[in-house]
Image 1 (cartoon, rainbow, N blue to C red):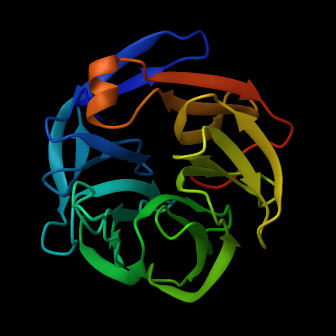
Image 2: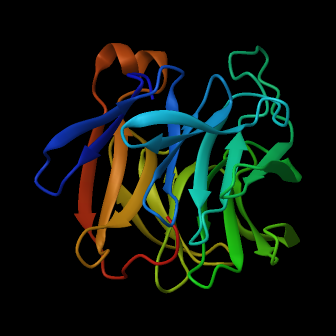
Amino acid sequence: MGAARVMAVDLDGRAEEMVTVPNRPSGLGWLPDGRLLIVSMADRRVLRLDAGRLEVHADLSGLVSFDCNDMVVDGRGRAYVGNAGFDMRERPVRPRPTQLVLVTPEGEARAVDDQLVFPNGAVIEADGRTLVVAETFGQRLTAFTIVEDGSLTDRRTFADLPGHAPDGVCLDAEGAVWFADATGQACFRVREGGEVVDRVDTGRGCFACALGGENRRTLFLLTADAYSGAAIRSRTGAVEMVDVEVPGAGWP
């Protein structure tokens, strides 16, 4: 994000720059035809990488309260995009509910919820019917049922997480969610209902996670000594990995 680049990293640690995003890249996802979607934070857009060139897929600036952040894209190419809802540089910090925006494969956008407190990482179950969103300042994971047109209904709490700040998330084949705790220096695995059943200590900030590798049993962790401006100056961001027993499922 701070370096304004999207990178690809393989299991041997080789890194390759895919594209530069001047207004800070965040959430990533793929359309069914393999084109990459990228959240551009500061100008509040979703970009599409077409043959090496960035195009505007959707402009969300008229729909969101503050800079966009994470995103999940389902198997039909529908993207759900969160935003901070407020400027975190404000003092005192005053979190408030904000919008979750649906972007269709054609680039049409509309808000599908407006009561999430800093919607951040999100996952969609393999059958495409359930969306789970991390509310970083809400200290919880919130689930919705996805209806045919992509709208959301049946809002419910997946897990209350007092004392945690869930950031990036990923889903496994048992329906549990791994969440990176932005303030807790660890990544936790939690079942629906709130039971924490596993954790990986990182010893420093953990801001995102994903299950990948050959059998989706490699848990990738994005870590850094600090966040935002301090992370840019220190250049300590890293991709770490650990093997887990239950493979990933759904999207991303």
